Length: 171
View 1: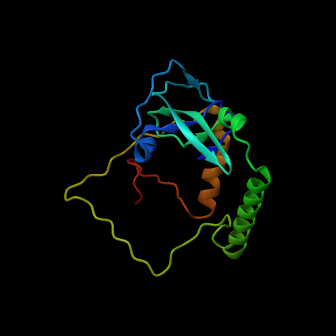
View 2: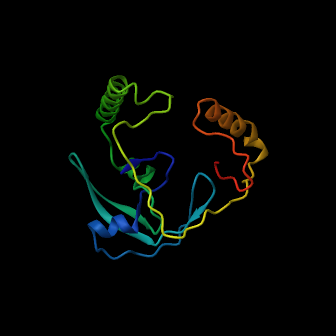
View 3: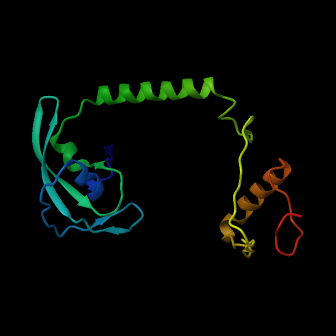
């Protein structure tokens, strides 16, 4: 469950809900708006018994058909008093563990292209398969400069190369 102080209510996908409960879902007229402005119409809600430390409360959990992360929203936060010091300590420990991993495996997480040694791969194609030529995809004007810079960078590093063939195939 992910804590989202921007979310008004707590939400779970029907797929995740059915893994843990067969409770009857009650209808609702609520329509949710995502931060992007999209509408999500819940299938309904269930009232669940929530226990956190010595607190026990009945709260609504909204069920959606979309495959979303389970969200703990503000409605629950108003009724359950979380131990924020423990949550912050957990986050600090997680960040410390991440930094330790990044330091230990710095050669994996640098910005250079990596390579796999001592490994052989085989590409199997169906008999008679023909290459497909796809036309160049357009890039929005706002992203054009960044895309061109990235293509130049990849070309300089030898990751990609220009093709002059009419069908776009390497020669």
